[in-house]
Amino acid sequence: MFIVGLTGGIATGKSTVLQIFRENGVAVIDADEVARKVLDPGTKGWEELKKCFGNEVLLPDGRVNRLKLGELIFDDKEKRRQLNAITHPKIQVAMLKMAFRYFFSGHSYVVMEVPLLFETGKMLNFMHKIITVVCEDHQQLERLCKRSDISEKVALKRIKTQMPLEKKVANSHFVIDNSGDKDSTFRQTESIIRVLRRSKFTWYFRAILLITLLSIVFGVAHITTNMLQNKT
Image (cartoon, rainbow, N blue to C red; front, side, top):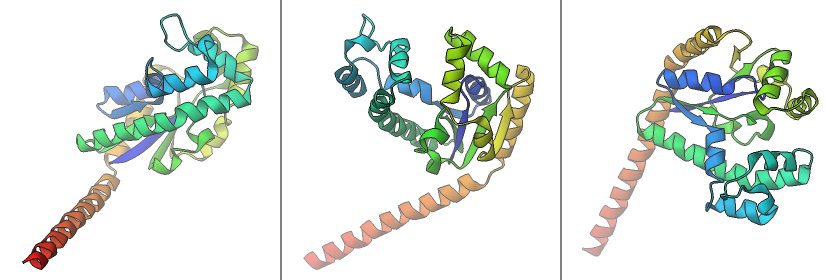
């Protein structure tokens, strides 16, 4: 099995593309969903968040107030660093565990959506291929304003905190232009799916894993045999 990283800019349409992969029977992992789970009330991440930021980032029912948390860390690099230190390691471990479960379920590859794949660099070494989703600048701005109910000034500020799309595109294997209608995005995504399905990398991976497992089994058997012979 191999992992395909799906990234792009904020509000460029990554979730739309991920859903198309899902509809085509591809195993997918959504970093945003995982991020929410690692901060569910009662989890270790939630406890650490509460200790670091206090009750002001929690709703009355104990769930994380993501709007408040976002406002709190957006202009404060130190608080953003603290949040990342709490969440990023847990998110990465959870996503890799999910990837292994997909592997043992027989999937040849998994698409993993990581919005800040290039910015953090933490998951890059696990990616066999990278897909970047882009759209026109004005569309990205409009979509972000509408989605988050924020002003253009705030939206632009958020967009500029991320790596420019041009740099992400330059370091990607595939690019999906989500500037048009959904049919166009669907066709582009399906084209990439056909390429990924033809990849032989998964068989190389399985062969290496099988050889490794057999080596371990035979090694253990050899050691066990020697121990039994020494006892007799």
